[in-house]
Length: 252
Length: 241
Image 1 (cartoon, one colour):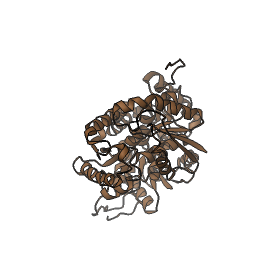
Image 2 (cartoon, helix red, strand yellow):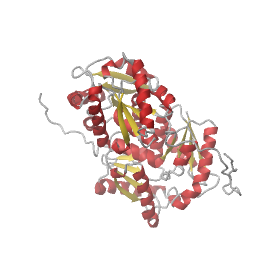
Image 3 (spheres, chains in turn cyan, brown):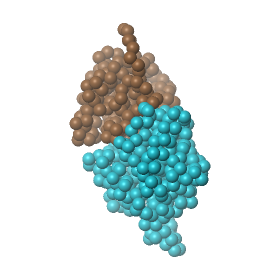
Image 4 (cartoon, rainbow over the protein chains, first blue to last red):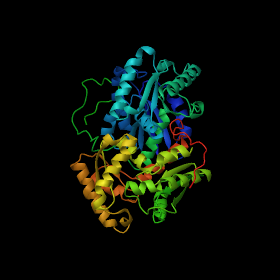
């Protein structure tokens, strides 16, 4: 199967790392193509960033379906444009947050989410993430939401520090908050399962891998999101007076 | 080779071949499946009484699978008998076809309907059982209805035409009257019908055998299994009897 991984940011900082993270864990017959956006924010830490990332993400997802891909992974924990893309596409589309909390709910009873981002952004990010898992109907399984305190764009340059903070924060989530699964709440935290194995019996859920697994299951089982719930948007003029997003306007 | 053991928790071998060959169509090339049933107990699970009776022998059978070198295990009944005990007992991933199905229904939709089996007289009992299980998984708020094809499990194979007719009828009612956006086949014995129902009614239909198998394979490949923090292994002690 061919899967398109869309990192909804306008920089290529993560493309190789994400390919390297997911590649070894994919099914033998899975071909992964990782791309980022031509325009949009460099990282998604605010609802404002998310709004800017949505339209180009939709355009790339539409292109993926037209190019014959079997599934799409929107590689960001904010799951930007997930519902919109599910309306427009018929192939399965998964997001990191949604996949991770479902996997955590299958493997345990109480999960914690560890976000990236500076301390000053934490309150708003926590409330956005909590509202998302509330909408998924799984918020009562959430033991806590914590942060690494590292800004998203600094995660890779400070990789060793990120790993240290991650282990420390995960340990606190397990011991103080009672988590049995710890969900890494940012696709930019590029650690492999071998780097975060021992959490005193608790499971670490790496969101990119959870999304990859769920997407592969859906494609293999010939399932996609319900068109009763996400009906195809009808044709009408949706063009912009000025092509503001760097993508060609379309009229259907 | 990755070995996955499927335990059909009933005292009849009537499902083993059909479950095995249906899953063979979907399995990874590196997966090897073995299907077994229980030696004693009820021949089908259609009430909580039946379900409770098979729990300990199901867990024992799963325990033997891990000792025999299986990398994953599947409990092949929508009531997932012994699932939580097996998650404690085993370190390899244990997947219940019920739990897996309800999660995938929640992932691709937001309101699902379960179409169960069993005699007409037990239809309300089936609905109560499904809701019991969903409450444990904390997904009951996503279930809009539990309907039934009103065919006893042991008659499913012999009444295939009626099964399809009833699935289409009840599935349509679930979609149009109950507002379901996704259907879940409520019995592991409804093999090979999901795609047809899905196409006819233009709605996704969860085939429990397929999602459970693919989920189990994904867990094995990603080296994931139930959290031992909340499904801690039972301590050694003697169990008499």
